[in-house]
Image (cartoon, rainbow, N blue to C red; front, side, top):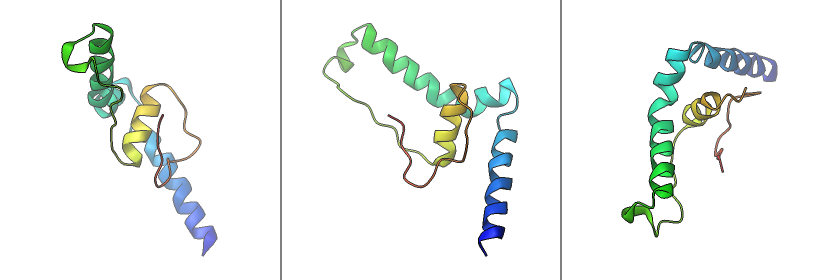
Length: 88
C-alpha cells in the first residue's frame, strides 16, 4: 500500500539525520571521502606530476555515500538520494 511505503520512507529519511547529528559523527561518516577529495584538489593545485594530465576523477558509492558528502558540505537533504543519484 502506498501510504505505508510513504510512512516507511519518511521514517528512513528521519533516521538518516540521526547518523549525522553531531560533529564527530559527520567527521566519521564523510571525513574519509572528503579528505580524499580535498587532497586530490590540493595536489592538482600544486601541479603534482601524477595528476597533471588527469582531467577527471570519479567516485562510486551508494545513497548513504552521497548523503554523507552532502551533509558534510552543510546541505540539508529534502529526501534520501534516490537510485542512480549522482553529484557533479
